Length: 179
Figure 1 (cartoon, one colour):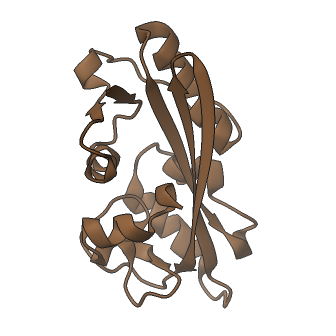
Figure 2 (figure 1 turned 90 degrees about the vertical axis):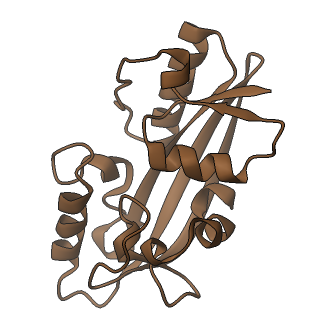
Figure 3 (figure 1 turned 135 degrees about the vertical axis):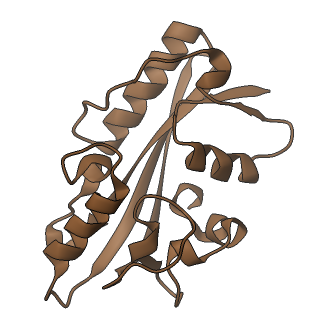
């Protein structure tokens, strides 16, 4: 079965492909010649995931799914949340986003956080929604070189290393899209 993942994030694409069964062939937006940027204009993670999946399903008449993920920090009242990818003001600037979170947490003892991922799946005209959460803490400093986004500052519960210090296989065993 062919399934389009409505993302331009190559890191997400690789992580998802690694966990899918062999009978599902994951296609990227590039594979279907989709070049337009789908703006995330909703105010919720589920809203953004649905918006992207609906756009691809309607325009390309295909089975697809989309996700939206947010880092929710308890002492920041759930921020950056739905605005995680553009928290510093510029979309996709992971370094600036991490630095802003670290700056806002400076001096705070409560560093509890969670990654929340919502997936909107469109199969044969039906919509399905899934949510995954991975609890952890925001570290005081960046560690590791792998991963993407907030991975260098997020340490999942029960682990002594950040997501960025884990192998893809180890991260996929506990990562938020799988919960």
